[in-house]
Structures are given as structure tokens and as C-alpha cells.
Image (cartoon, rainbow, N blue to C red; front, side, top):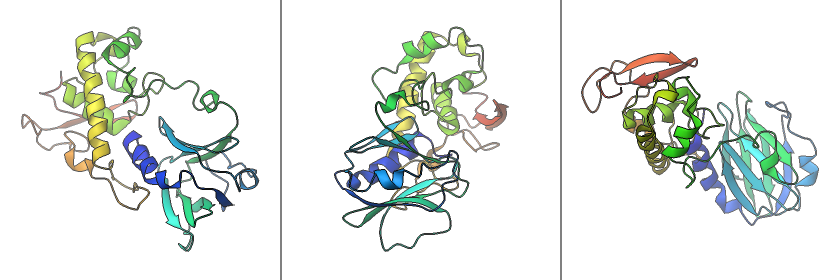
Length: 270
């Protein structure tokens, strides 16, 4: 599943669309995770795209009368193309702009989302309960410490909880915990404030490093320009079961936490 760095990489690649007006909207298959509202095809033509923002793993496209909420789901991809680019089998939705550019959503599994919101989009049911952004100034170790005092669940599960902090998915949770030297199975309420301060810093650093590398391309992710990300070449633990730790040489191990594969070094992480 595309995580925060992949979604942000996609958003950045779509920025040339800001300021353009919509010419036409095509809905080829509305049967996504939630049905694509048919009225979008009537509402958007003639409207200008004023901004492209990201909230957690959602891309928010702000138009004259509302906001289009886009989510990549498990295998979705949003591309910036020209109108003469033929649509493929799994290209379910597109916005054609007046200058010839096209925003096109391809989603083989159809777990993504295209939704419309009028008014304050932050009050939308999908966004209203989200926690702070991990790259924002209000996210730090003190916040993590405060939000985990009554959370006995494994710390990896807790930092993947979007009500605690958004956008820290399976890959980047494993990598951040390794960098912070914290075992992923440690009870969240047993981690000290000092260790949370380090973890918050490593979450920021890990996500920033991933952004610089264009995200991770493990299966289906490609940026809006069609290029893959390369952060997987820098992984310390994720997907490296049995391989030597890049710091101490011990064999990387894997366990299941919250029904997700979790990777760690038994020596470096305590």
C-alpha cells in the first residue's frame, strides 16, 4: 500500500495542474471502495484547481465549490498525462484540463477513493478523527509519550494508529523503530519519554529520507510521472529477514504484530 512518502511524491508530481480549469470528467468505473459520486462529472467542468494538499494518505484537490478527496488504496496510481494517452483497463477516473493535461487514476484492486466534499473538508468523516502529521511542528516525543500512557499494545501498532499520528505505515514504522533502537513489540506505555523523543525524530528523518528517494516501489507504486521510488534500497530491516543487520551483522528477524509482518534486529533493538 502506498504510504505517506508515496502519496506526497504523487502530490508533488501533480502540482503543475494547480491553476488550471477542468474541461471534462470521465468516470469509467464508479465501483471503487466507495462509489465515485456521479455528480462529480457535472460539478467540476469549468472549475479551477486552486490547490493540491495532503492530509495523511489523502490528496485534497481544492476547487471553486469544494474539495475532491483522492486515495490510492492498495495499488492505486494517479498519473499526470496528456489527453492523447490511451486509457488502460484499470483506468477508472480522469479529469481532463483545458490545457490538455489529464489527471488519471489507475487502480486494479479498486480499493482507492474519489469523493467530493463541500464546506470544511477537515470535518469529512474520513478526516475528522485523524491525528497530527508526522512532519509537522506539533508532532514530537512529548506528544507520543502523552498519547501512549494507557496503551499497552505493541509500540509499532500504536504508531501505525492514525488517531495517534498519521501516515506511519508498516514499512516506515519498522524502519523508524530500528533507527530509534526500540523493539517493535515493546508495550507502548512502557517506552520512556526520552526514547519517544528519539523515535519521533527518527520517524521524521525516515519519512524525509523516503521523500528524497521518491518513496518505495515494492509492487505497484510509481509516481505521477511514471518513475518508481528508490527508498527500498536503503531499508535497514523491512523485508530483510535472515539478512545481516547493516549495523551489527546479526540476522534480521520477523514476527507478526497486528496481523502485519514486522522486521527488526534482535541486537540493535531492545
